[in-house]
Length: 390
Ligand code: GDP
Ligand code: MN
Image (cartoon, rainbow, N blue to C red; front, side):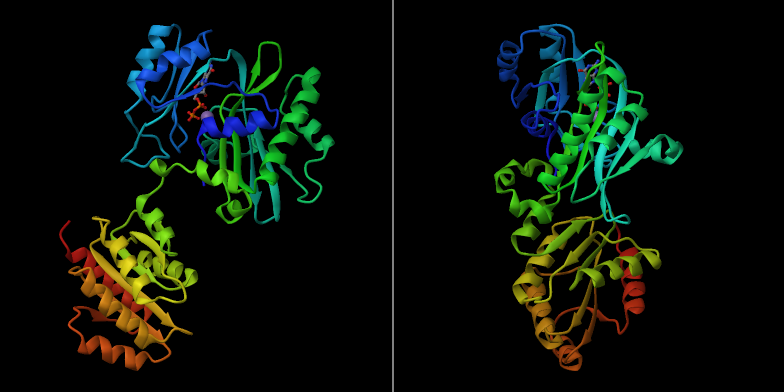
């Protein structure tokens, strides 16, 4: 679960990290109230969407006077922001954050993520902030410093001080810097985050350090331990199909292609996506209907896949283990009837009672082609999707 900048900054403030507060505005009528609360300009008007690169896309604007705040708010609220992280369709801005602007002399980058290879959290930091970290990693990886964190002991004070100095931050602010890095790591650990990022971290005129931006992503597996934040989820920012899937216990992730995939088991779902890609196709989604794969789950899965109008063909790839193939076949037949399926459908069934399953399918009125291997299924669905006019 991702948070908005204004929410992340609320957490930062709770942990005593230096951020500027501001007011969240959803309607232009609230701008005056924000100006009353924060009467001293200049201000920054910032689009609140779950994607980085807002500045370059025109979603972060400086305003010198009150008139300009209203103007920028009018410009940004309701605009469609297109940044490298929003996808080509962009995201409509439904909320803005109005906050006093900060005057600074230097931009840096710092984040904490999980390093799976080292099995511990790691701080990524660079004296070259402001740009996207992906860009820096691609063109100048040596400019990124890494500090590995002992998951039990946390970030040692000496590591935090060392990082402060190696980033070229003012030596007389070493205690403030060290506290800040330790604070970021503490938030990361306390809240089971998958990412905490400050880009840019800035140095003010007096040498002190300030978090100008804030990004926080929770690890969804840890969220049940942080119930107070569950209501912070913003449905405006979530893929409606992913939300619908989650409600029915399906695990679904939208992808960019045109082949709908209905698979049981996460490993098989990934292998299916790979096989489709291998034969020149492109999956529209990752969908794991789970071990049970009941008629209800399969029906919901079909509904979710069909609600995506990019989908031109559907591949069902099911391995009957504990759940037998005949039961699954019946599930597919019933579900397809309920959703009046008309797209090309390729089915590959394997495992317990596969013969019974095949018999049920062939006796049904369902229009489909049967594939007896993964390769055959992937090849067939790629050809089928290519044959459908978009
Ligand atoms: P992002 O583009 O989504 O990462 O949004 P940021 O919050 O990082 O803002 C983008 C850019 O706007 C920053 O890199 C700064 O250059 C600029 N900016 C944001 N807030 C301020 C501010 O308070 N003062 C000044 N001078 N610039 C700001
Ligand atoms: Mn930023």
